[in-house]
Amino acid sequence: MSTSDAEQQTPPAEVTVPGRYELVLPPGWVRIPLRQGTKEALEKVLFSHMGQVPEGIPKDDAMRFRLDMRRQLEKQARAARRNGGLDLYLPVLPRGGIFLMASFIVAEMPIGQANGIPQQAVPQQAVLAELANEDVPGGTAAEVHVAGAPALRRDYRSTPDEEKLASAPQAVQQVALPTRRVDYVIPVPDDPGRWISINFSTPGDGDIDSEFTDVLVELFDAVVGTFKWSYE
Image (cartoon, rainbow, N blue to C red; front, top):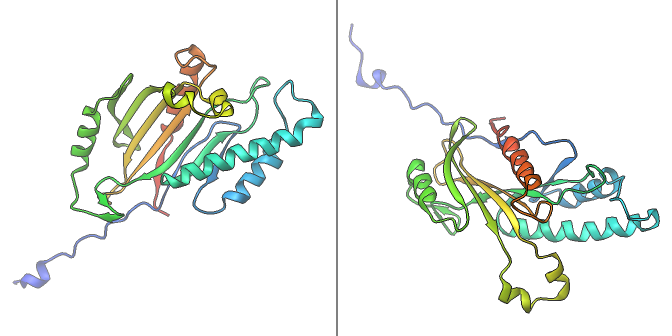
C-alpha cells in the first residue's frame, strides 16, 4: 500500500494565542481597566470601595477627600493609557488606618514593531538577553520565569530631577517623591513581536530602602507570581 505525498502531509497545527491574562490581587486592591469602562470602574472604587477614609480626616471632609482622590486617579489613568496601559491596579482600602501609596500598571510594549506594525520577528530569548544587559542605574535586571516562561525583572530607584523640580509648581514639588520601581517584561506566547510589561511604583513609607518598602515590593512580586495567560 502506498500513500501519496499529499496524503502524507499533515496540515500545521493552529497556533492559539492567549486572549487575556489573569492575576490574583491582595485584599483591598482593585483593577481599573484603561481601554474601556474606566469611568465606571472609578465610580465604583470611589463610592463603594472607599467607604473609609484615612485617620485624621473628619467625616465632613470625606466627600472632598473622595473627589480629590478621583481627580488624582483620573490623571493617573489618562497617563497610563497614553503609555499603552491596559489596566491600572491600586490599593483602595486603608490598612492599619492608612492608605498604601503604591500602584502597578499592565501595558503593551511595542518591541519588534514600528508604528504598531509587526516587523521581522526577533527571537524572544535574544530580546530578553539584550534587555538584561542594559544598564539599570541604581538597580538590577535579571531573567526570571513568569507563567512558566522566560521574562525579565528590573528593580531600581527613581528620584525626581532636581533642576526640573525647582521650576515646577509648588504642588508638584510637594508630591514629587523618590520611588522604588519594579518592572516585569513578558513575551506573549506564540505571538512574536507582542510583549507586555507590569510596572510597579511606590514611595513606600518615605524611605525607598526601608523594610516596609521591601515588604511592598515582595507583595508585588507575589502578585506577579500568580500571573497566567487565559485562552478563553
